[in-house]
Image (cartoon, rainbow, N blue to C red):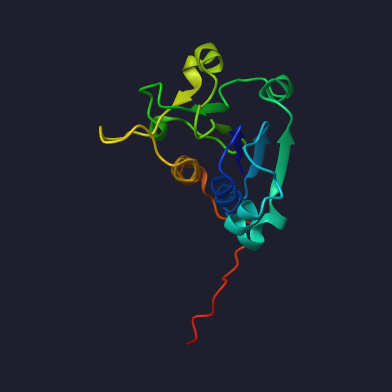
Length: 163
C-alpha cells in the first residue's frame, strides 16, 4: 500500500505501535539507523503485540544508504513542522514513501531544504511544538489510505459479535 519511513527513531514504543499500524494498513515499514533502541527490544515487541511477525520490515544502515537506493520524486512526502503545506492537501498515491524524522531531531534540515516541494505538515494549535511520532504516522497514513481506499485483499473480523 504505502511505505512508511522512520528516520532514526528513538522510542521503541512508538516504533512498535507504528509497526502494528503498518501491518493493519498493509504498508512496508522502513527503519533507518541509527536506532535509539535494539530492534529486538521488549518494548518494541510489546507495543507491536503479535503483529510484529507479520510486518514487512526493511532496515537501512543510514539515511544516505536509503536515499541512494530511492530517487526522491513527487512520490516522497517528508513530514515536518518546518512547512505550511498541509498533509491533507497532498496527492497521495499507493506506493508513496511517507517519511518521518526522529522524535528528538526530525528529518535532517539539509534534506528538507533540498526537497521543499515534498514537505508536508499536520496543522496544530499554538499550545505545543509537535505530536507524538506514532500519532503523526497514523494521522498522515490513514489520510493517504482514505484517498486511495478500494478495500483490502483480506478482511478479518477478530471478534465474534455473538455474546
